Every structure is written in structure tokens, then in C-alpha cells.
Length: 492
Ligand SMILES: Cc1cc2nc3c(=O)[nH]c(=O)nc-3n(C[C@H](O)[C@H](O)[C@H](O)COP(=O)(O)O)c2cc1C
Figure 1 (tube, rainbow, N blue to C red):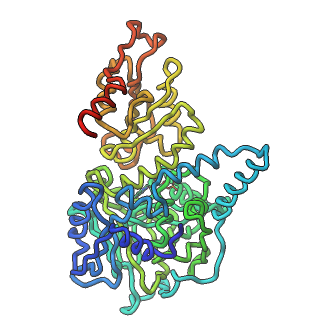
Figure 2 (figure 1 turned 120 degrees about the vertical axis):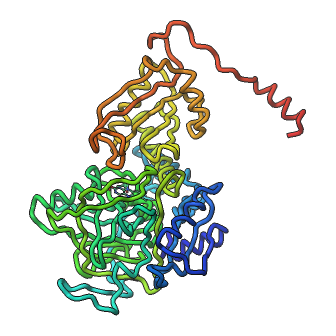
């Protein structure tokens, strides 16, 4: 199901009892973070919050602020128009497994899958709700008191030592200058003044690669940033798709409806017509400015570093625009549920490459890449190492700091069970491996930024060919018949 606006998504959350409205003024400086953080850490991820009167330096912003809208498995599913995120994984699996039809029935099934993909193709439209209100900023013009600028949006100062206010849910649209391929990524933006921000695309991300090509060509890089609209865009911007795979196409596939794209008013990039706010602008080759500190996903402040600067040329928005955002910090936070949905959706892709993979989990404590649990159907010696190296070689899985491989009968979503297997099944020296690898730019632990080591731990049962010659003991387990009998006796 597709949402025609972020407000429509909020209405769906409200109908499901998943949204709390807050009518009294609450400050964008720290207070909203504190409220949202408590909500995100409450059982099941609490509720989504709609602050109807967020204040900026004491004045009520004209835009309401929504937060924690995807902060539970249920809300994540609602955001993608599903009963459960697992449904999308099933659809991915069908497409990946599609083979040339050999019968009328299989041809029909394939056609239906094709129809699903047909929605993926975006379509161009002229004008749209996101351009109901248009404010252009002429270069070198003085600030007009009538035009809203970045300072009028209810942008959070999340944590006390943050370097300023940060846009935390920006969908950043760029284009490869060589191929014309589009990219949509989520990279936070620190507000410097009313018309400029930082652009925190880390060195490994596609936006940074596009930027580098513009710098090499000495050309100004057009950039458009969208806020809100169908939440599928927000999810698609964060999803670790391979470079070159169009996130707008992916969003169309998720929402089962073509994304209507409208041309920006001050550059020739295209953005979804139904978003709430568009920040149009450019990045100037070679211009860098200190960005941060920022209380990050890691639970620590990331230090100040130089990043490109985004200059605003226009703000366009819906008349009834809502400002969507999140806060990151000590886990668990809202982003855990977004990451888990990505993992569930991409599990079929991983399984296509590694059929022995049963399941995979990135526990909240590992803030995305720090800790990966993967279960496999083990068939031959050192298969666990093949899986570790395979995962380290796949896109953003290269950041996985610790990979723990367990047997198929271990539930990777139960951290306690994985730790039990890890402690019981490993001889630390024999069952571990270290590799050199690029590291997540946010990781403060490596000696040098962005490079360091990763560790793999083989917590599977050892086969004779793996140097363990004593025979592996059986796991202590009760037969199902006894369990059923005791269930009956206990009245369950
Ligand atoms: C809330 C949130 C904030 C994020 N902020 C950043 C960021 O500031 N910089 C960055 O490089 N990646 C950030 N990410 C991760 C990227 O969005 C993610 O790696 C995405 O796949 C990048 O897209 P790309 O591969 O098209 O570059 C963030 C993710 C989330 C969920």
C-alpha cells in the first residue's frame, strides 16, 4: 500500500493506536530528544510522537514534528504498507527465484511478479504537492523576513554536546555525472546558517562517490533533499542497496505504486512529488567545513571532521507539511527497527549467494555493523569462515566488526542463545580469525579512522576435519513427547 503523504501515514499510525499527539509546546533543543529517547527505549519501542507545537529558540515552529514513527516492528511494517516486514522478504524471494516459465501456470506467476516490478518504474509529472509553496533564494540576496529558511524548520539539537542542529531524516538525491544514474541516500545535515548545512556522506557511500566525480570535473553538484512523503522513501534511502541500483525504483516496488517524480525548481534533479519538504541546492567542489560533534548511532559523540557544504537555492513544501525526524544514541533506538527490516528484506539476497545461510541478525547492541549473528546449515570444514569472508565482501556488510557463526538450530534473534553457543562451542584461538578491512567511518575504536580489523568467531559444532578429534557432545534437550505430556499436566 502506498501513502500519498506523510500525514496519511501518521493517520494510519493513529488508527492503529501507535501515535501519541503532544499539543503543548516542547523545545527542539534537547527536550524532544529526551522524550523520544524514553519512548524508543520503552517495551516494544513505545509510540510514535507527533509534536504539534515544537519550539525553536522559544518560538513555535509552523511545522509539526513527527518522531519514532518507525520505531517498532509493527510501525516499520505499517510504514511499508505490510502486515509484517517478513512479507516483503517473501516477495523478494519470489522475484529472485523466478525462472523462465515452463508452463502456463509458471508463466502466470512470473507475469504477476512482473506486474509488481512494473510499479517500480517512476513516472514524471508536472508540479505536485511538494511545490504548493515555493521559496527561491537568489544568490547573494539578503534574508527576507517572509521566506521560511532552515531556521524555521523544527530541526533538533539532539544531545548537549552536539555542534548544532541536525536534520536526521534527510533523503539526499544526487546523480552520477558520468552515467546519469540516480542515488538516494540518508546522510545527516548540520545546519550552519539559514541557507547552508553540512553534508555528512561518509567516504564509503554513493553520495560521496558522486561528489568526487563532480569535484574531479570541477563542476558544481546539484543536490536535492526531501523530507517526508511516503515513508517508503525514508526506508529506501537507508537501505544498503548496491551502488547503481535505483532506490526510487526500489521504493516503487515496496509501495506497489509508481513514484511520481517532479523536477526541482532551481536544478534539474527529480524528487517524489508527494514529499513534505524539498531543500534544493548544490555542493561546491572542494569546499569543506568542520561538521560535528554529533551524538551518534554508536552511543558516543562522533568528533568534528571536514565534510562538504550544502548550499540552499530553494525550499518548496506542502501547505500542511510535517517535519519527520529521528534521534540516534545509546541503543536501542528507532534505527534498530529500520536496520532489522533491511536485514529481513535482504536475507533472500544473501541466501541466493550463500544457500547454507538460515538466518541473520544484527542485535541492537551492535548498532548495525558492530555485531552480526548468522546461522548456517554446516556441511563441510571451515564453512563458517567462507560465510564470514563472503559477508565481509558484500557491500556495507564490509563494516561488520564481529561476525559470529552458529549452527542452524540456534535462534540468532535470541542474543542469550547465541552467547551461550559462542561461549560453549569455541576454543578462542582455534575458532577465531582476524582480517584487515575498511571500517565504519563512525567507529571511534580503530587506531586510524576508517581502517582496522574485524573478527570472525566460529561457534558451530566442529567437524573432525576442523582439528577437533574428540567427537562433539549432544546438546541437552528433552524429547517433544515428554514436553507435550508436561504441557498437558501443567494445563497449557
Ligand atoms: C537515521 C540514519 C542516519 C544516517 N546518517 C548517515 C550519515 O550521516 N552519513 C552516512 O554516510 N550514512 C548515514 N546513514 C547510513 C546510510 O543512510 C546508509 O548507509 C545508506 O545505505 C547509504 O546509502 P548509499 O549506499 O546510497 O550511499 C544513516 C542511516 C540512518 C538510518
